[in-house]
Length: 443
Image (tube, rainbow, N blue to C red; front, top):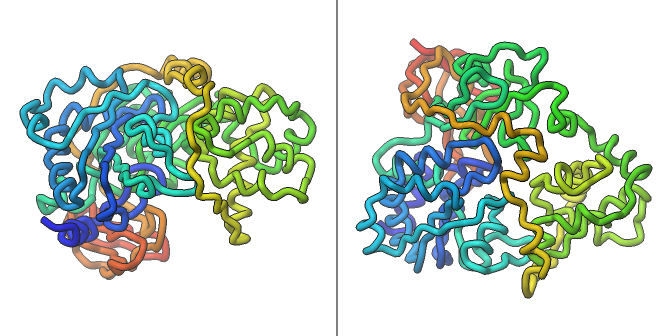
C-alpha cells in the first residue's frame, strides 16, 4: 500500500488524533517521516485507555504500524510505554517484532511524558526546534488509539466508538467503549454517579482537562477521560480561576522566585521559555519587550507550574494561555525555529514522577485499579458534533427524518481541507441538524 492509498483510507474513516487537539490524521502522514513513535504512555494520571489497548489490542496495533512503516518508508518505529506498564506486554507475539522495524521503548514514569516534545526526546534523543512539530526532526508521533483506529479503518470500519475512562468520585471506576456523541451524563450513570451538585466533572485528564457540564457535553473523538471531583477539591478550585484573577494575583503576590520556569518541562529541555518573565510582564504591564509574551507559544499547558511549582497560587498557565490566545488573535507568533543544543543539566534532577503528581494534586484515593467494559455502551441517543478536532467543521450530508446506520457517513469535509469526516455511531433516525451537531435517535 502506498502513502496516497493509506491517506485516502484514513480520510474516509474520519480519523483524528485520539487525544489533544485531534489533528486530522490524513494530514499528518508524510514521506518525510523517518521514525514513528506510538504514544502509549498515558500521560495524565488516573486514565487507563492506553493501558487497555496495550493489554487487548497490541498485536492489532503492530499490524497497522507495519503498514504505516511500509507506506511512509520509515526506518524505525517505537511503541513508547511507561516502565510501570511494561508488564502488560504478555499478550504480544514476540516473533512479530523480531522480524520487523518495531521496537518497544520503555519510558520513565514521569509527567508530562505524553507531550510530543518530551516524548520525542525520551525516545530518540532529538529536540524539536522551538515552535516546530516532530516532523521537523523526521519524527511522527501517533497515539495508540489513533493507530488502532487505522487498523479498524484498514478493515473497513470508520471511527464510531471511543474509549473513555470514568473515574474519581464514582461508585465504580471504569473504562468504557462508547459511541461518539454519547452524553457524558450517560457515562456517569453507568459508573454509578448522579449527584452533580456537590461535585464537579472534568473532561480530559485531571491536570490538563477542563470543567464540563455533564448535562450538555458529549463524548467526541478526542475524549479520553471523565473525572468527578468534589467542588472544593484543590484542582477544581484552580481550574475555576479566571485569567483576570490570575493577572491580579500575579501583580500582588508574585515574588519572582522563578520556580515556574525552573520546573517547566520544556524549559528543562533547553527551550527559551521563561514563565516567570511572562508573569512579570503581564503583572507589571511591561510593553517594551515582546519576548516574554511571544514565549507563551512554547507552553504545552501541562500545568506543572500551577500544581507543583508555584507557591503563591498564581496559576501561571492561565496567564500563558491567555497571552497565547491574544497573540494568535493579533496574528503574532513565535518564529525562533531554533533547536536547543542540549537539555539543561538540572533536568535529570527535576523530572516529575507521576506518583508525586498524584500525591501533590490530592488524587491518591482515586489511583486504583478499575474494570474495563469492552462491549460498546448502548445509548438511546447521540449528539454528534460537526467539529471534534482542530480545523474545519464537517458539512452534514443527511436530512432530518432520514434513517442511518452505524458507520454511515453523515457529514463530510473536502480531502484538501483541515478537517475530518463524521459517521453515525448508532443505527437510528436523524432527529435534528443544527450548526453544531447532528442528533440521532436509536430506532
